[in-house]
Amino acid sequence: MRVVVVGAGALGLCTARELVNLGVADVTVIDRGSVAGASSGLSVGIIETQYLDPLAIEIRVLAMNIFAGLERDHGLKITRNGYLRPARTEADLTAYERSVELQHELGVDDAKVLTPDEIKTLVPDMKTDDFPGALFGPSDGYIDGHLYCSILAEGLDVRAGTRLLGYEPNRLETSKGTLEADLVVNAAGGWAGRVGELLGAPVPILPQRHMALVAHLPRALEYVMPSVMDYIPATGDYGLYFRHESREHLIAGLHTEEAIHDLVDPDNFGRSDELDYMDRVAEKFAQRLPGLAEARLGNVWAGLYPISPDGLPIVGPYAGRDDVFAVAGAGGSGLQQSPALGRLAAEWIVHGEPRTITGASVLGPARFA
Image (cartoon, rainbow, N blue to C red; front, side, top):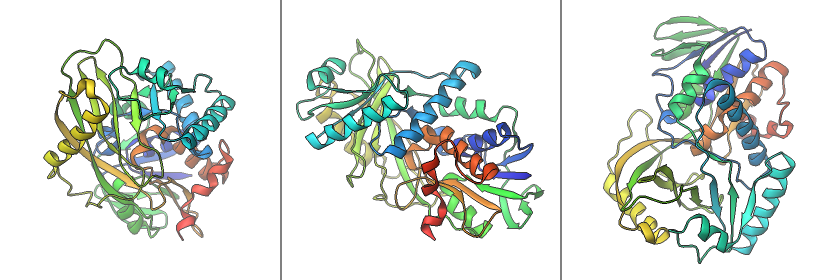
């Protein structure tokens, strides 16, 4: 079987790596740019399992196990500063308790629900009086997207600077010549919609521009700041997030997993609202971290969240097609889900079904047909 993967970001490289591990000898990865040259290289790199939906948790637990293997065997550095998801209501706490139960069943033994006093002890500079509790994963952390993708690319046939121009069965036209392929995987991130059109297999990707920045703290912290996500999934709003970078710096931004943001052209998205963005982050930052309200915000950068219409990743074959697969639409959580989604995509291709997480068949692109 000859497989061409379009996209040398985390999703494409994970898929290619898993295909090779399953015995597919002829796998080529092409990318219009370079390895981790787009969203994967711009990600803040948070990896964690503190979610509410059972499938989302199972995907992330699988991903964390694969990350741990890369850490052990290939030198991937994981900064395990922990991950905190505050609650706002008692209903949130009930959902968090269910999450902890499922995580424990899946082997994440240290996930737990914290009391308000425990949150304050963990993050003394954070305003916590409106939190009845929080979901916390002590072993969660963050990685460097470039290093991660460089490790994934080792031993793979990756062809950078190779743009897909056209497709017909068994044949791809690229900017660097023709490639023969029995099967094509669309893992093109924010460009997956355009690649889908070229493949005759549309994928509904909503490319949204999101920004992040560095908070230069007014004083060095005497503790390691966990990653804090002040956002509840499916609330229809944005939430402040921040994480440790050093004792003097945090990475911060605004996060959502929903299609509530203006769409952009993936070839032409700038930082025109940089000052407005810093003002919005500064307001939430000062409210949530009053002890660090004098932080200086700057070093803004922008990247794409390639979100699907329902906010879930798109992984699997197209109805009526056996030559095109998709692994896309993971939004702002693509890096953290990539090891698991790559494995599921590879299993779909080799076995005709996702075997590691059988319930993942619901993520196929046929749901948008």
